[in-house]
Amino acid sequence: MIQLNNIHKSFNGVKVLNDICFTFERGKTNVIIGASGSGKSVLTKCSVGLLEPDQGDVLYDGKNFTKMSIDERKEVRKEIGMLFQGSALFDSMTVEENVKFPLRMHSSMSAKEMKARVDFCLDRVDLSGVNQKYPAETSGGMQKRIGIARAIALNPKYLFCDEPNSGLDPQTAILIDNLIQEITNEFQITTIVVTHDMNSVIEIGERILFIYKGQKHWEGTNASILSTTNKELSELVFASDLMKSIRQKNS
Amino acid sequence: MGIIEQLGKYFILMGRTFQSPSKPKLYGKQIIREIDSLGLGSIGIVTIISVFMGAVITLQTASNIASALIPAYTVGFAARQSVILEFSPTIIALILAGKVGSNIASEIGTMRVSEQIDALEIMGVNSASYLIVPKIIAAVVINPFLVVWSMFIGIFGGYLVASLSSVVSVEAYIYGLQYDFKPFSITYALIKTVFFAYIITSIPSFYGYFVRGGALEVGAASTKGVVTSSIVILIVNYALTQLLLI
Image 1 (cartoon, rainbow over the protein chains, first blue to last red):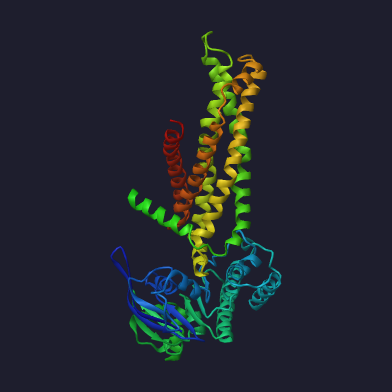
Image 2: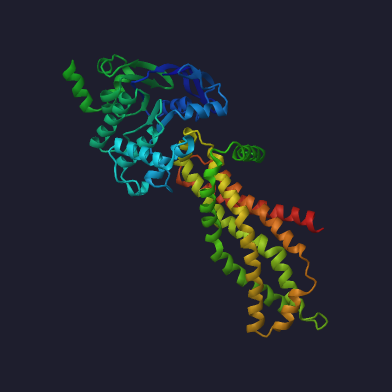
């Protein structure tokens, strides 16, 4: 479980996050949504310590991450997996070396054990047999799956996914969504997904946080979002004709 | 950003770079990779520049000595002193600042904009240390060898001029090379090389590490890294010469 308590963040005097409070629950897919520039990515970066909040605390299972020393944070970060928007795979390493990297850094596994773990993780994301390829030799969807394999290599307790579906075709996007949800349920991890994709929100959003102009504007579930009366949220969710027709059918 | 702020950021980054490395034993492979990429990959350009540098110094010195009172071996003496004291350590450092510096700033800058550095941080890895330390160590280890190679090739370039033209005899050139030789000249050149190696790697790393934006900004960081490290090399060169030779 990750708790955000009164998070504030400004850049050059411009308030980007204003008093955000929310709890990301364990074993659930928690989704952050909002228009571009609403502060979703900044909130995610504040949550994992890539940015320091001006005010407020981030608690990982009750432990205050914001007030931890560098070494204490390192220990928490070993339990965090993150899938980046552009996958952020290391170009100079093969797929196998990419997935093995967190193991080499933080585990005392033997070479054989590491190989077995890498194979397990790649198999888990349906990517067997690509071990010796370089990221540039794989497709966008494969890179996302390699990113997930790397993120789960150390058995994380917390999984952050920043725009996991961006740049993917609808079929692959659904595959990635299903994979994230399966992994969340299988390993009972706290998963946080930042997305624009309303299909994903409806499919996997067990808990949803809507941010509007840097503030928490709405929270709920994928069941309740379709009947929301919140004006700004409706504009975002029902922006497409497809979603509008779904709302009409529902009503 | 003001120069004081930049300096402050640079020293904070260097502080982070040299503290708490994540699994230092993993750096061995990285250092070898960097020695190959930054050092061995530069042998070709160092050889070409050095041979022509030595040849031109010999030709120019010979053509400018018109007085019969100045002995012919002065050509060899001047070529040796110029190559060892200044041309090999400083000019090669400036050339490497362009070649290696732009490579480092672009590599680290691209890693920054493609979130690879964020990925390292999320994994609990000291990204500054993991990315910059192997480059600094590799350059500090391999650059003295490159400079000694450059000295040898530069002097050989002068020897080629002496053998292939009539501006100076081979005997006079070789006598000049040996005349009043002080081994400290080599020590001085190598001390400078170590300082320059640190500058060539750490300053472009700094510019690459703090890139914000995309391809344009990576290109700008690469240029800034090369220009700044070249200027710092010239300033440090002056300071070291004052300290060690005067």
